[in-house]
Each structure stands twice: as structure tokens, then as C-alpha cells.
Length: 339
Image (cartoon, rainbow, N blue to C red; front, side, top):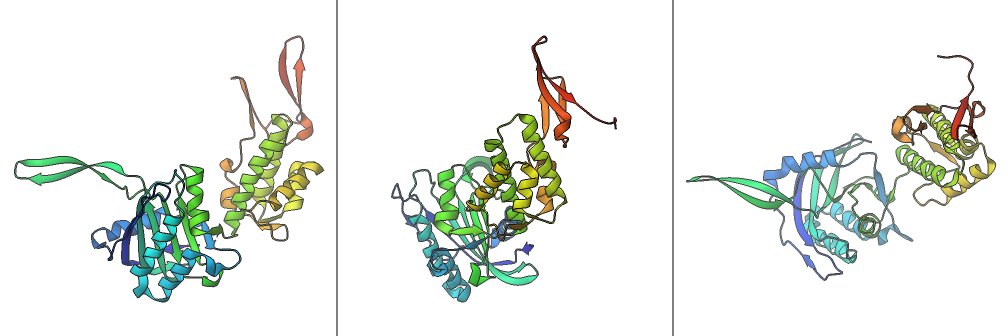
């Protein structure tokens, strides 16, 4: 998926405080004059959002009950209601800002025309919350020379929380790209779950990313053998995923774990994962994130400061033991020839 930010046609800023501390909402009456920073805002939007991180609005039992989805729909239907509807977005955020951990901040709501999304021209709405101020040195010219002072400002290179809502796929919850620079889990969840009510779109990127995360956690928590056994599982996993366009989860688990109990447990765990949707047990693999060496934990075993053993396979060709006389552990490796 590719997108390009078009032209900013309207912008308004409200201040949303913490409801727990009864800080309230400070609404702006009119649109903000953004012309002097338009180019910087567009550049910030284009570089800040990861294009693969696509979500959709949802709500049970009916999508129309999602407040932000309904407000975005009203704005896209009639752009003249932008200022009026933007206040409802601020109010919806305030209602979810009841944790003591949530910081108050400026809520920037931007209407963007003539964006490109997968080759189509669409409008978009950006919702950005700035929470963290940075001390900035400001220089100003005076008759006596140049004056220096400190002001608190927001770095354009950092967006604390934000989303881009593209006016496409309305019936399935629009296309939403989200940012959440997490500094506290409770404070972070309120943005995606409580305020936006979004869920990841089941793309190859998302499913592969979630599969890798689940493998890491499962191996760490359930493969109880020594480091060699864990390295063997990870090595088989890397070999499978780096060469596959798609995988059958049951077949993958059987081949990777080579243990019926572990394989069944892994499949059962995936079925119960809310962030992961197994459709007929077959999922696509995004090689860009499955193939890099950093995709899964290293399969190298470090022995003191003298030796490293890199595991690529060979389950039956490596033996670990303990030498009673030397009172040291050892590995015995079998091979056919040196390379």
C-alpha cells in the first residue's frame, strides 16, 4: 500500500485535558491559520506513518456505533461541517482520557484534500495529539543585537499519538494508519482501543508480524529444553518462513516444533489470539519482515568468551554433556566435511 499526502484544506486545534483530573476541553471556535507551516506538516505526516500499519474502525455489534468513524463519515459527507464535527472528536477523546497516566495535550485535526492512496485520489483526515513539549532556543533580532530565549515547543519530527483516516472502504471501517509512541501501556491502549476502536487489517504484513511475535513468545515460554532445542526450533522456523509465499499453520507447527504436544499448543494459542486472525489456517507471508536475520531471536549459542556455535539444523549431530573429571560442560559436534 502506498499513499501520498495532498493539500491541507482546513485545520483546527483543541486542547484535550485529563478527565480524571477534570481538566476539561478547550475548544477553538475557528479554523487555524496553517499556511506558514503547511509544507512542514505535510512532510511530517508523510514520514511519520508506517504504510503497512493499516487498521479499520470497528465496533460491536454495529460499526455505526463507533464515535470517531461516525464523525469522520459526517465530515467526508459534508466538509463544511469540519469545525463543528471536530469538536465531537475532541469530546470523544476526553471521555476516554480518564486514566491518571494520560497527559493532556493539543489535538490537531486536519482535513487533507487530493491524497493518493493505492493509485486513487481520496481525501483524508489526520488526528494528531501532541503531549510532550521540548525546550527550544529561540533567537530574535533587536536593536541592541540578537536576543536568545527559551520557549516550550513541539518537535515536528515526533508525533505522540496520531491517525490518518483515508476516505476509502467506508463500509468496512475506512483505511486507518495509526501512530502510538507507547510510554505507558495503559495510556497507550486508550488511544487505539478506547478512543479509535480500530483493529489491524489482516494483510500479509500484519499476519507475518503477529506470527513472528507469537513464535518468539511461545518458544521462550514453552520450549523447556536447553538452548540447542530452542535454537533448532528457531532455525527450522527461519528456513520455512524465508522460502514460503504462504503457510498452513498446522503444517508449519508440525515441521517447526517436531513435537505433537508443542505443535497443537501453538496452533491453539494462535486461535485464541485477538490480534491474529487465522482464515482456514492458511496465512500469507511477507518476506520483507520474515527473512531478515533480526526477524527471530539468534540461533547462536555463546560459550563463555571462547566459542560461539551457530545452529542451522542437524538435530542429531550435536550432543551436550558434562565431563566429571574436568568439571566442565561440552558440546560434541558430528559432521561429514569442513566447508
